[in-house]
Image 1: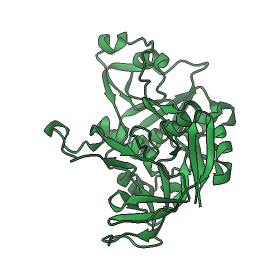
Image 2: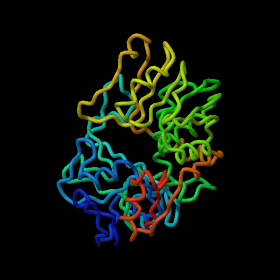
Image 3: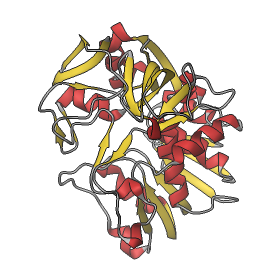
Length: 340
C-alpha cells in the first residue's frame, strides 16, 4: 500500500508499505481523507516536531477518517464499511493517574500518538491507504458527517478542549488571536459554545476571510491595526512568543488567556509583565481528552467546519500538498489529502 513517509528534513516519499493485519481488538481502515497539521510540516521541514526528532522513517498524519475494511477477533460494536475517524492517542502503561488529574488523560506522561516520533520505535500515522487501529480508538461518524469532514474531528476536538478550559462561554465576548486552522476552529467552537461575539485577528486577509466564514463577528488584520483592548476572554492560537506581550495587554484586567497555540520548547523572548500587573489567568490547553466525540456530535448538530478546507490533493501529490500548507502566500488553511 502507499504511505506518505518522512525520512528526514526535506525528505518526503511515497513508500510502499505492507498492508496491515487486524489482530484481536483491532481494525483495519481504508483511510479516505487526512488533514495536514503543523506537526506534519515540522517533521517534513526540520526532521523534528518540538523535542521529538526522527530516528527512522515515519508515516505522517493524525487527522484521518475512512471506512472499516477488516475486523479483528472480538470486535463486535463495529462493522465493515462503517465510516469512522480515530482518536490518535494511546496511553502507554497502566493508565493510572493522580487523583488531581482524574479524567485528564491528555496529561498522562506517556502517550503514543499517530504520526509521532516521541517514542522509538516511532508511532506511524494515518497518511496511508490503510491504517491499523485499536477498536477502542475508533469513533463512528454520525449520519450526515462524511469522511472529509470526519477527518477534521481531531483538530476540532483540540479547539473544543481549549474552549472547555475557559468554562462557560455563554454570553461572553471572545478574542481569538491567530486565524490559522486551529484559530478558525476555535472561533467556530466558541460560537457553538454560546459566545456572544468572537473577534478574530491575524496578519493574513485570506485567513481572516476563513475565520469570518467560520463564525467570527469581526476580523482585524493586526499588521496595520491594533489588537482590541480589555477583552475578558482571549484565546492565543499562534504560539508565537513575540506576540504574547500584545495579547496579554489586550486581555482585560482580571481576565483569562487560554494558550492553545503550541509555544516553543526552547527559550524565547516575550514581554510578560502584564500577566502579573493585570492579574491575568493564563491557562494552557493541550490536545484533548475525548472531545473528538463531542466534535462529531457538534458537526451532526450543525457546526459547519467545511470553510476551513481550502485545498485537496491526492496521495501521490503529498509533496505539493505539504508545500501548499507551508506557504503563507498560498492562502491555505486546512490542506486535505485524499488517501484512498
